[in-house]
Length: 86
Image (cartoon, rainbow, N blue to C red):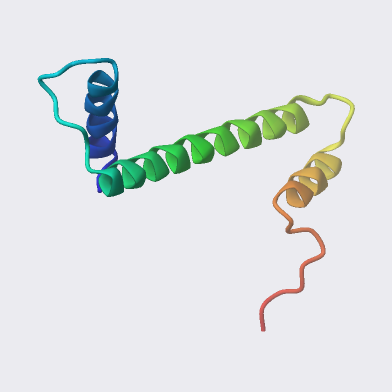
């Protein structure tokens, strides 16, 4: 299911839920798929916003040297002290 389709389905379902008798109830299986898709998109967006905020704090910290900023960014991504792939 495409995100746009999921949003449209949820909007129509909400209209039905609020009493619009010109709309049929959505298929529960499709409704569940739409909810899952939209929730995953929201969670990914929130995670991305949180990551951008953490990066911004590190980069704008004037008390850190360039190497310290690099190390904190590597830690943020879990990349510091990783062994190279052989």
